[in-house]
Image 1 (cartoon, rainbow, N blue to C red):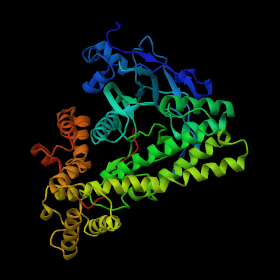
Image 2 (cartoon, rainbow, N blue to C red):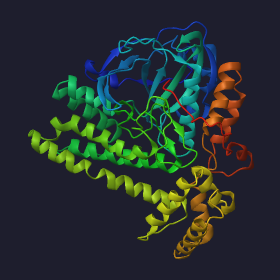
Image 3 (cartoon, rainbow, N blue to C red):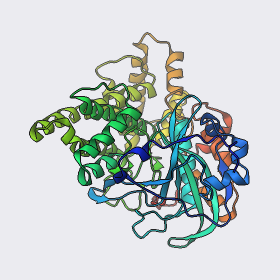
Image 4 (cartoon, rainbow, N blue to C red):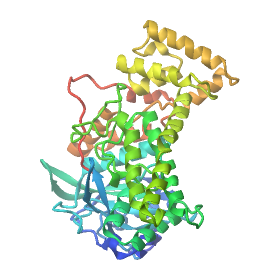
Length: 486
């Protein structure tokens, strides 16, 4: 293969102790075909988009050709899955390496669905078209919403069948991430590695994601704090757009602060903190309202893993970790409250702001008001379009809100502009995503998905062509369910 595609791999993860990975090439597929390709992402990575869409370029996305500078490997990690700790690892993912961009940035390039690895635990290591396109759609929508996330470079069909409950067309997704270091990576190191191997991993994570942390005895405590800060900000952003991750296991929580693994995720329609979509989350562990405390729980597991590095005295190490982690709820709440103020156009702070916000949310829950469309209607100054309109409690709330806006120095136009930049016109509505996946999976019609992606690329623009993507699904009486498939 000619070297005009722009691949420029480094392999710093492969320079960690061998305990953290196993070398593994993808298993070639029969007849790969490019389904979708992310031109703008390719350009930002320093890749040649035209070359990558040729037969030779697609061969890389399919795992049929390994770029010369690549060192493919499967990463080892562990994790608490629904509260139960287990050994894991890349069972259907292979890291090709780290693309070095023209600006000197480093991004993991990972194939999802390229075949079995030593961590597959009986699985086939493959993936189906539907879940891979779902990750492409949702991850790119999250990026457009301004939420830190892994991204999707390409999806190829494999020309082969995967067997789940039914026969499904196979596919491979190329995922781009700041890294694939997880809380579960540190849990793995703490449980099956030496203290020195744990230290090597922590030093690597600091160098890669938090280079501003200075050397010193509190270096690893500072690392814990920085991860906590990013996760608090990330989960607040999820809450502010009604995103439900669905499977917040510790192996799905990144050290970089990016959203990762779009399996049973979905966006909330009617506001209800108890909303759960995942078919396997029968107890509601990862419900919308539980996401913030679960973030804290996961961070506590990271803190436990780092104890040997925090202090030589275990009791003192625990004290240091607990003191640091105790700041998470307040940190998250500050991000959430600031974001909620912005969603209703408030710039400054007053003591009763939170009560004003909670009153609105309580009304929304009571009346099953759509989360996104309620804030959109307020932004467009059309409160009559909400199901809340006409109730005496909403009329009273609306008057109190207008009085609150009048007590800040910023103009009404400034408030509306703040709201426009904080309240998306469109989100990946679950029924619209399903329509796109059905067309792609059953008819190989990708035009529905392409139109959806175009609309989702500018969620804050408030354009006429977005209106059709704001509609709610017809009521079937059945709750929407998502399934782990990525």
